Length: 418
Image 1 (tube, rainbow, N blue to C red):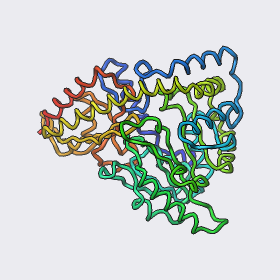
Image 2: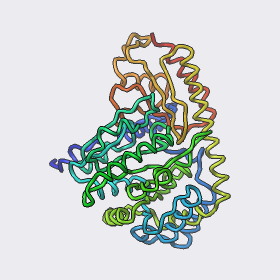
Image 3: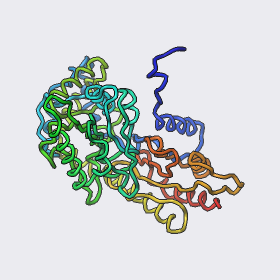
């Protein structure tokens, strides 16, 4: 069947494909530690009880009609108040756009800013930037980030691509790495963006920053979240934030996200979204508007939620590092934020006890899955080199009682290699 060139060339989400395959195996009774999807087991990490009740009440009040294209007014006001209180970012109603999670907002932003052939800068591994550039026929300006920089781009990495670029994609805390941009590095990047925009003619297209901070509430220990506008107020004219409740409140299926930034860009995003119909449901918008004002309830929820996530991340991290100290070819980067742990399985070239050679990273992934029953996502699913030995491990579905047997099984699996 003949379809469009775009459809012919489009690659589906590797993460979703892998996650679905693992889910099917679990349904058939196979015991697998599924750390693939950036989602939550709602039995382990439920949404806030108050938010759940507000959603039920909203449906009972028959809030089932179309919402406005930019989101209901009381939600945009609640988001503005939430941002002002939590991040000291002050945005007006017409600078905030509501949608059904982050994905349609990112797509709308790309469609608003990126013309065919425009340069889009992004680091890899990163979530879906490669696909959105492809969808908008932009020019990929890809930065291969390294473990030495916690797989985050630096100003030096970005500099060679910045002349004439249209969009710079930053995500912190980052999916898939669970690491963050430091204050110093983000300041350097902002200064470079401002210098580049000041050098362009007044009527030229500017370089914008898509700042995905969907995980900004989930930082651990001494790690702090920084944003371009607070660090460099002049960046307000060039920064579009992507945010929402999906990860902040384990509410991925509730589908309420928001973008905020310069009013002219937000207005065009609204126009794009009005044709897509990617609105957050009316009842959920009503509920979130009410919940965002519950400061004490939010503080209590985040305290317990973050403590549980941090325990899982750090326990698995310490387990991986203990295996490394025993001489196994594994590694991990200390978790800083989000729900992800960056782990390394540097096993290419080793042989199984049956004598089978692990000749490439795909073979390593399959071996860990078949023998240790651990499902994790290779970094190539996030645009990195196919031979990368690094992986994303998500703890959103992780039960505490599973960690010890999972690590024990991994050690036995590693010990069988030679």
